[in-house]
View 1 (cartoon, rainbow, N blue to C red):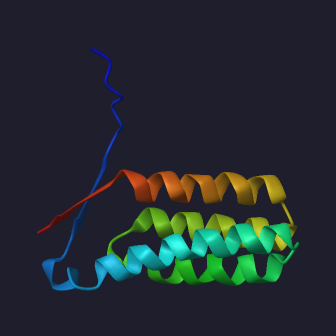
View 2: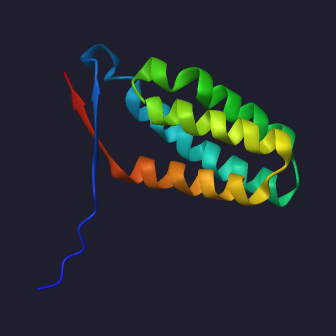
View 3: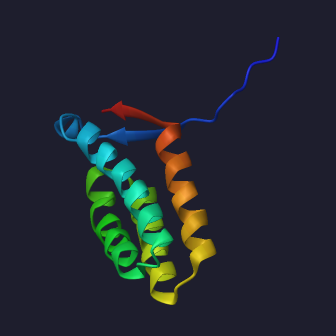
Amino acid sequence: MTEELKEKTVVRIDPDLADLIPGFLENRRKDIALILSALEQGDYETIRILGHSMKGCGSGYGFDSITDLGRSLEEAAKSGDEEDIKRKTAELSTYLDSLDIVYE
């Protein structure tokens, strides 16, 4: 019996935000696509802006990791570090895939 076990990241969110969370997370998935597209075009300014936006809003919704990854993406874009941008974008994708949200 082989079963792949994926580690879940439990995030506890205020129930008052329950209606907003699905849209917020969908927008972060859209950000991943935008970042990868911008990276192909060498558009580091767009990546910097997206990272800055994530840095500013993640914790407000209860997702400190999104704030941290946004900060890292912003810095990587400022320095033009393509590999770090790819790494942090992959981390964001993995994080979003691992979320187990508990409203309490």
